[in-house]
Structures are given as C-alpha cells and as structure tokens.
Length: 334
Ligand code: TRP
Image 1: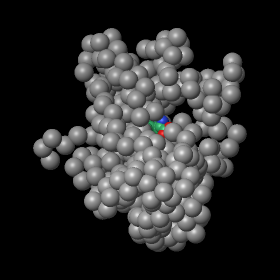
Image 2: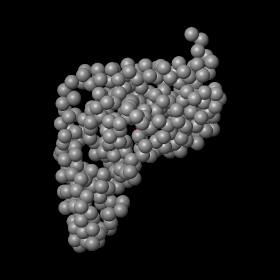
Image 3: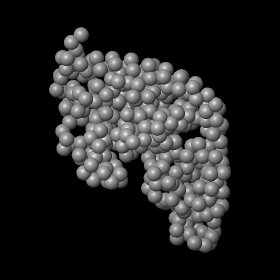
C-alpha cells in the first residue's frame, strides 16, 4: 500500500486495561491497523523493571491484556500482537544502544524521574528501570517504526529514541535506524473517576474495559463532578468535570451533549441526570467489548497461539534489524 507506515506500540502487562488506555492509544490503534503495518507488544520485559518481584502478575496479565486488545477490536489479522521477552533481539539492541547514551541523560528523562518519585525508590532505583527508555528505543527501532501511538506520558521516550537513532546513524555513518514520531490522541489523558488528572489502576480511580455492568454503574454513580454544584439549580462547571470529559470521549450524540453542557452551566440540571446518560453511553460502548472478551476468554490457549504466531513474525523482523545494526557497527563476524 502506498504511504503505508510502520507502527510499534505496546503496554506493560501489569493488570487489565481501562478506559484511559482506550482513549489514550487503543482507539488510535484500531483505526491505524487498517492503514499501516502495525505491531503491538506486550512489554513484559519492561514490566519486570519495576515488578521483578511479581512475575506471576505479569504472566497472568499477558493473557488479560491480550483479551482486552482482542475485545476492543485489535484484529490479529491486521496487527501483529507479540510478547517482548520472546524477541531476544530487543535485549541485544538495548545493550548496543546503552553505549550511545550518558547516565546523566537517563537521569533527566522526565517520565522516569516522575515514576522514581511515585514509586518512592529514592536512591535505590533498579538499574533495569533506569535504562528502560533505551530498551523502549530498541523496541521501536527494531521494527523501524515511524509512528508510535501512545499516551502523552510517553513523549519523553520517543524523544530519547530519536536521539538514539540520530546518534547511531551518525556514529556508524549509516541510515539503518528510522526516526519515530509519537501519535497523541486529541483527549490525551482521561481523568480518573475521582477527578484526578489521570485514570490509573494504582490510584484506584479506573473503569476497566472488563468491568461488569454493575461495577460500571457503581463507579459512575460515585464519580466526582463539580464540587461547587451543590443544588440542582446552581450553575455547574463543565471544564475539569470528568463526567463531561467522558461524554466527550465516548458519546456519539454531539448535539445532545452540547445541550446537556449548556443546561448544566445555566443551572437546573442535576448531576444524577448527567450520570444516568453517561452510564447509558458507557454501557453501549462496553457491552459489545465485554461480550467479545467473554468469547475469546473461553479459549485461552487459542489466544496464546495468536501471541506465539505474532511473536514468531515479530522475531524475524527484529532479527533482520539486529543484523543490519551489527553490520553498520562492523561486528557482523558471520
Ligand atoms: N512504556 C510503555 C508503557 O508504560 C510500554 C512500552 C514499552 C511501549 N515499549 C514500548 C510503548 C514501545 C510504545 C513503544 O505503557
């Protein structure tokens, strides 16, 4: 296909995926798989960099996240879904690239810095965690991906990858590696049900793609809205009100949502009415996802087969790039 590009993206398998994942990158992947050559990776090696003590969680999450992918419509006929640890070339590339980046540069990666703080590592950061942006550069470049659909917290990883690519191609006087570009969703970050800036499993403010209808109803009911909207007749705020952000992300009836917003801002529209509509909207989106998930979940061995087949295909591509990398470095002895 003309103008067909290569896409590589992925998720750390440390739990089921939620609506924030959907808005931030799954939705883009579902669209892009029809146009481009797409690889989606279950980043178990990266997950180990901060979950070395929980390999069972990672193993179990490989299947859970794969089910989430298949349930939302990532189609294994169009997208190569694979497991990072089954591609040894990625680890080898990481080792070569590590020599092209300084320790000081790694220390200044803003996302890594934030995560170190959040995880309370202090001085005791696992070395593997410190260098995961370089392993991510290996993931992206192994497939010569030019597009990377990710949440906005991943922008520093793409920047660091671009630096590795430029340095490698300059140092070894070649054009083996391809510079990637991040694809960021228009609603780059879905707030949590508690109104916090980011939906996240660890903040306990997430609606999961696999939540039952009852659980979703419960979560929507207790959602944070505008704390200043005390009585129905009070004017309410739409900005920063997650109920409306979710409607913008998942609602189809734009005119109705615009009416609700205007009414809410004028006053006279109760939170419970807006939430009732949001629940309808979310259930309409989630019900078919749930059903597809249940179908696939009946055959876990079949899902693993999809991942193995994808991993075989991905391993070939990455091995080819590794060979070119060794060639450019002049260490292709045989
Ligand atoms: N860092 C990503 C996350 O935390 C996962 C990931 C690993 C990734 N390798 C990647 C994303 C390569 C995009 C491209 O979700």
